[in-house]
Amino acid sequence: MITRCGFCAHEFTEEEAHKTCSKCAQFGGCKMVMCPRCGYEMPQTPKLIQMIRQWRLRRVEAAQ
Amino acid sequence: MSTLAPQRSQPLKYDPSVERAVESVSSRLTGDYRLTRRSVALLLLQDDPEIRELVQETEGPNFALVNDAVHTSSQGFAEPLDSVISLQRRDAVRAITESAVRHSEHSRVRFNERLSRLCTSPITGLPILALVLWFGLYQFVGIFGGGTLVGLLENDLFGGIINPWVTKVVQALLPWPWLSDLFVGEYGMWTLGVTYAIALIFPIVGTFFLAFSILEDSGYFPRLAMLIDRLFKTIGLNGKAVIPIVLGFGCDTMATIVTRILETRRERIIATFLLSLAIPCSAQIGIMVALLAGHPAAFWTWAGIMAGIFLVIGYLTSKLLPGEPARFAMELPPLRWPSLTNIAAKTYARMQWYLMEVFPLFVLASVVIWIGRLTGLFGIVIEALKPVANILGFHGPLATGMSEVFLFGFFRRDYGAAGLDKMHGEHALTGNHTLVAVVTLTIFLPCVAQFLMMKKERGMKMALAMAGFIFPFAIFVGWALNLTLTTLNIKL
Image 1 (cartoon, one colour):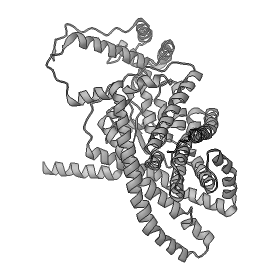
Image 2 (cartoon, rainbow over the protein chains, first blue to last red):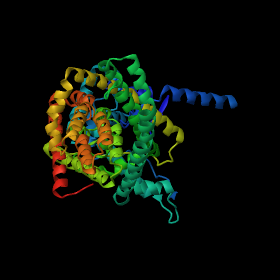
Image 3 (cartoon, one colour):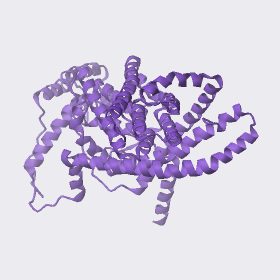
Image 4 (cartoon, one colour):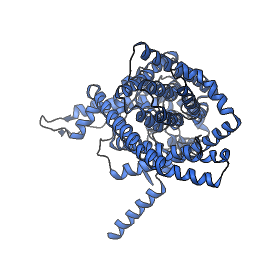
């Protein structure tokens, strides 16, 4: 899944993001992804949002 | 605008010190690469992890020699070589563009480009920042989120309907007051933990993260970094430090990890210290602004004091720690109209993350307080904290309330701030009382997790030194503010 950095607009995958961020002291882990270019942190896209996006994508593909 | 065709391509020449470093590294490379040895050397000097891995694999035992050359060459520069090379490339690109591009007199600057320039210029950028704070923070988060929405949820829904019903049911099921207090007492898991999390924190954090996501998606933050780069240099930081500082307004603990992106140890220490001292987190900032919503003068005084502390303490810390801030350069992404889908997704994700973080801790705090009250320990600590509340101008029942706020605030600033909101409702605090309490609590260390993160990132000695300064300093500022307001007979 491609994530767009909210600071520098760099696009990256969550696998790339995890290379720069290790586990932290937050309760249950921080659930954040860190932009590999500028270091800005954003929350991971929640499963619900991922499902809605995939559903919309499938509808667009079916319509074509 | 018209362009001229380049006459011939020439490799970019860096200044002699960089060229010497490139030569030193490239002369030690022996393997075959798709790129030229000069390019590989430049990427190694810029600490590119993929190229480093490739060179290590290709060079085999010779890698130690190459690595040594990279290390020795980098030590000759005051700033990281990545930043030095990027800046020299930027200057070269600028020179080429100026010689090759001619601007027509009639060419029009697009609206978003004009707005982008206004945001980064100090003359127009600072008033724009003040407008963003006023409408985004004070009006939207403070008045609407903290006033209207909290009023509906906390007072009308929870206070008027849900809590009386839950209390009645729990007291009927558990007729022993010592036990029912755990769930529905003054500090019960439901009446305090759940009510704070859902009726107070949820609307405030929701409006804050909505405003934050709009700014983030529009591309305003990198412009803010360019705007305050010069100002941050006076406190030993640069524009890049905007990233942890802005994230600190969401969560200081997370932002402390992000200080890793800063180039030098000195910058990381200054940023960590300022995050712990002068940057309130999202829930706290929302409650603080909501408390000050009825007193605009108090709001601006609070904002002014916090900005002053940030700059003065930052400046003094930068003088204590020797060194120069690294230079800052970044490519500005275009300013764009925020997308509704992005805003909704980001706000939802942040609220989900925050509630998952805060909810168990609020419930846990209720259990700790319940045990403290059963054993009598809670009362002893409250009594011990009363003299501190007296110093700040709180007497009688107000001193008891303020001591509770302090006790909560030691664990989590936002929990303390929520306690302050409760106290505000019960005792109708004056503008002066509210301002003194809000300023003191904002300076407190954010939470226990923040302290643990400071220890992890900066070491135990540094974390203890910072905490040892922050708590007495918070009380000192509160005392000085109360004294000033009383002496000058100012009533907010």
